Each structure stands twice: as structure tokens, then as C-alpha cells.
Length: 486
Image (cartoon, rainbow, N blue to C red; front, side, top):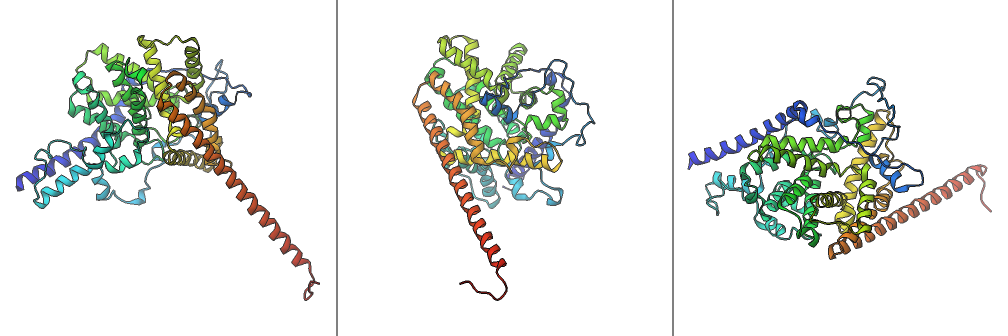
């Protein structure tokens, strides 16, 4: 028994050290592999002052407002604040001390931690293969995964049940339920390793762009893939790429947007020529992990490279600055009724639209979930604004906590970005799910408006009371000392 226990403890330590090394090696590979820095794409939207949707998208993240003809980037060194190392924006201060043993245990699933505890105490496990198989599908987590296609799926609760491993468990479950592991002859150890590396490359200290958001987008993507038009036409390769793109679409997100990276002369902005900077980085990071894990190494080289390119096309579609381009093309197809999902190019386009919907579907969730997501994304916006103000940079409009509120940001986001896209999606897929999403969107928008009106009324009332109080104080000071009111 003692030898067995020692073997178990050694296995856990080796796994822990192994993934630490992988994260370090990935950073090296992303910077040195010429393939990972070879692709670039340009695109722009109209900035007509009358186009409120375009203006709002511009506020959200696009800064290419200067003419591309003869455009010369601002020379490095011309700005007093040369560079921000975005890896430290949400990091723990050095004074915080070493990571506690409790945090280290988060790297193990709750079930594996229980198994190891039972062995240490000499209690036999109920599953004799528990020390070999990664049994994360027990209890409430397993029950939730049985309803993973439910639009009311609470990803925050699922993440707690899986001890912070929601992305790994959800994506593995979906791969298994679709039979993708057998169809593509994926090595289960490599797949598990790949998913763990993905989850660890999301920055947990980001309020919004973290692994929980990626898991939520993956769950939404699964819901869309279950819609009749997609379920009847999507190939196994489409399903694989759709789920992979959803899981990696924000990989290694720094917690700041593209304008921030550009105006601080960050190396990523220079690397991708100020064009779809974050989306290109997410894609290249995903390709790096695919190669690091050798998940698809058994496939022919041509097929593997083709899948990497298609994965990039899906992730690049989430660039908010190209929202109007995709929306206009989608609307044109629907008006002409010429979408044919037996056509590979059309299927890929619908996958792009589905991923875009999944990425911004939070306002279409039930109020309890939608409100929490809204607060988290606004917290991340305001954190960036605080950094910009601290370093005397121009504060991005949506990131200024002094002139914005959660309600105003969400109302604008729903009106100019979310609603136009989901109206067209409802035209394409007029199902119960689409009706549910549009219903939640309407109720949530109304909820934010009521909250904003109430807050403004309270602020106005407080200001009026303050003015009245100041007036009374002023009148009392004007009375001569010792006098009395008649």
C-alpha cells in the first residue's frame, strides 16, 4: 500500500511540473515559429457619422480611422509611455508571497483530489480504476452535462462544480458525445493534454476574457450546432473545427483591447500590422498548442495545415471591427435565399456567423446570467481605462468609468451590435431557441433601461436634496448672531 501511495503522489507531481514546462515552451514557440507570424488580414467598416452601429463598433475596439494610403505608424519612442507588458496587468503583486497549497490543489480536479485523499487515509476508492481514469463526470457535474444543450446552462455553477475545469470537462464531453475522438482517431491522452493547455493559457485573473467565457461560448456553439439546419448538414470536420474555434477564440487574451496595444506600441500590434491583432494572436496561439500537443500529428500534412487555416478563418471572424461586413453578407444571402449548406464555402460562412453569435450571446441569456457577464466585461473595460488614465493615455470611451455605466454600455451594445446580428440569425434559423434568445434580449434590454432610469432618478433626487440643504445652510449663515426667525 505504501509503494502504491508513493507512486500516486509521484504521478501528480510529474503532471504538475509537466504542464508548467509546456506553458513556458509555448511562449518560446509562438515567438520563434515563422508559420505562427505569417498571416495577416485587413478589413474596415464605414465610419460615417450617421452610422451609429459603425460608430459603436469603432468605440468597442477598432482604431483604424487614419487613411491606409500612405499610412505611417507612429515611430517607436515618440510616445512618453512606450510599452505596457500586458502580462502583468492583472497579475498578483510580488508582495503577495508564494502560491498557497490550496491554490496548487486547484490544478487537480475535485474527484482526483478526493481519490488521492482516500488513498492517503487508507480508504479504498469506489471506482477501482479511479487512479487511472480521469473521472470528472460524477455527481452534479455529470447531471449538468446531460443537459448541456439547454440554453439556461449556468457555466459559473458548472465551473465551481468542476473546481475551475469547466472548459476541459465541457469540451472533452462534447468531443466524446459527437464521436469525434473515434472519427479522427484522436489520442485521448493528447486530447486531454491539449485541452488542459488551452484552459491554462486563458488568464484566470481577467474578469471576463478567461476560460469560463471560453467554456460558455463553446456551450453556446454546441446549442447552435444542434439547430436543425446545422445538425443536418455539418460534417464531422465542421463540428471539430467549430468546437475548437469556440474553445480557443480568445486564447491568451491580455484583458485589454486592440487600441490599447496599438497606442502603447505593443509588439503584437507591430507583429500583425495593427490589423485584427488579438484575433491573430488567439489563432496563432491555438495553432501553437495543436502542434505542441501533437493532437493532429497523425493526419496528413496537407489536411492538418488546411484545418489550421480554417480554424484561423473562424477565429478571425470574431473581430468586432468587421461586424458590419459579416452582417451585410449574411443579410444579402438571406434576402437572395441562396444559402446552400451542401456547399462547403456556405457551411463555413454559417460556422463563422454561429461563432460570432456565440461570442456575443450573453445579452440573450437569462437575466441572472446575462447581468453577471455584463458586470464582468464592464469591470475589465474599466480596469483598462484606469490604466490609461494612470499613464496619461487617451482613455478609450467605453473604458471610462467616470462617464459610463454598466447600463449605458450594455444598452448600446445590445442596440448596435447584438440585436442586428441575432435578428438575421432568427431569419436564418427560426426555431424555438431563436425565439427564446430574442425574448431574453428584449427583457434584458428593458431591465437595463429601467435600472438606468431608476439610478438617474435617485441621482437627481439626491442632487435636489443637496441643493436644498445648501440653500438652508446659506440662509442660516446670513442671519445676524442671536437673532430669531419671526
